[in-house]
Amino acid sequence: MTKVVIRSPISRNPTNNDQRSIAKKGFDKLVAERSTYRPHYSGCWLIKNIPRNARKVEEYEIKDARVQIFSLNEGIEYLYYIMPWEYELSNELTQIVRKTIEHLGQNPPRDFSLCFDELNSYVQSTSLQLINSFINNNVLIRDDHGTDNEELQERLARIVAKYTVGLGILEAMLSDDRIEDIYIDAPAHENPIYVTINGISGSNSIVRCVTNVVATNSEIEGLVSRFRQYSRRPFSEAFPIMEIDVASFDTRATVIGPPLSPMGTAIALRRHSRFPWTLLKLAFNGTIDCYIAALISFLIDGRTTILICGPRGAGKSALLGATLFEFPRTQRILTIEDTSELPVKKLQQLGYKIQSILVENEIGVEREEKTDEALRVSLRLGESAIVLGEVRGKEAITLYESMRTGKAGSSVLGTIHGDSARTVYERVVHDMGIPKEAFGATDIVIALGLYRPHGSPKQMRKIIELTELKKDSNSGEFRPFVEFDHHTGKFNLHSVQDSGIINRIAKSWNLTCEEAWMNILTRAKMREILLAFAQKGRKECLEPEWIARTNEFLWQRMDVGKVDHELILSEFESWVQRRLGLGELS
Image (cartoon, rainbow, N blue to C red; front, side):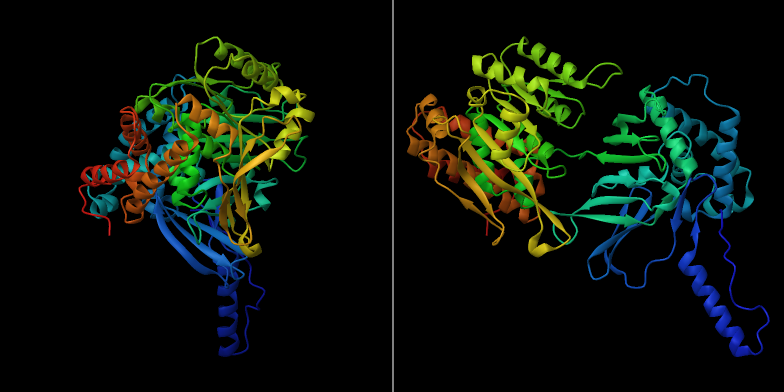
């Protein structure tokens, strides 16, 4: 364990016992406030002290670490205090980890072209054999932990892998499902790492937290070296930007260095959710409500073109991914992304017909050109719903050309930067050069935003507006379906019965506008039933499997012709109760 020694400003020759006592207290206080420590194998220091004005808000366990969240300055700031298990090892166990790492350094794997998962597996298995031998030869450890303590040995092997071929303490932070972003600003050794975390003082709030972790320059160099190795991408003064997917941790890493970052190398890690979002999960946390979820479900079912806009961090990708579970499982879906964020694997596991196209950045090739090429290829792959991770640049022209001429087939979904439907229109028409007439292929724009109730530093994600493009106007006019009221914190709902989009869907389904409206309300009430069970602790009702089954339940009854909505709701509630094995809703 590396220690930091701080010299005391107090004289070593006190004149009496009182002075000696005061000096000792002062020295102890100084050390407690300024001490940092780390195991020799880690490149990150932990700040040990907790500020005096800190108030503990939460405490929980993550993989091989304990986390405490503290409120500072009466809630203006927050501290993310992490204590990894390996930072509290006894001296004997620390020495075993050290000896194992040294042995691995002297006997590296023969094949350095292994991917991260393969290299990690090799290091763990090799370390496990070494650790078992070291423990059996250490009397103190054998007496304290026994020779058959497999769990201890496996944890020690994970530590070795974490600090040799892995991401070190960042692995523990990336295992925390509450963390969304991790930032290491340059110069790293002078700036504590900070994170964006969700769920503080409310399930839908997000805040920035400083952490008690400070990375050394050698740690940053090691991380960059591993990123280069696993991605096969250059990083130097000639190429000062590196973006890679760290698939093993569901994370996107962005690294910048000199001369772009004159103070040194900086790293940003954007963590993707390990568990796919659904519209009902977004209703559960307050981003939307059940009516909005039902309206979006109806619009997806009606094969509309939807653009989702909002600032960074507003949840555009989460909402886009959630809408995919509203498609019928028989609908073919093509996704085009430059970062794997959409829940393609989960959709395939549930039986959805989905094909992913990943557009990776390449040296000397513009991302726009590759995305445009991927879009053109997708248009030749047959009738499909097209989902663009982000609409920007050259591919937007191709997209709107195909929509206008009918080549795009079924629904078209995508995200785009902008804070309202109007700004999306301005960006697409004026910045991207899409003709006004072509933009008319857009049906719906959903705007997400970050809402700060009463000016609080805590931010909450909300749908700000859900609007329909008026097709009888080329001036970019929109009709609101839903608007968020910042004063009341509630959603204002507008009538959709005179909507051109709703009427178009109703006509294609051989429904009256009134029947289409009842269809939306029935979807909303079905979701309210599921939400009620989730609020009673049965959160499995929010999962994708339930969303798919819920939609299929409705479609099966729509097939019979004339629909009795009250009967559907009664049967649906009974069906949910049977599947959950519960009694009547109270």
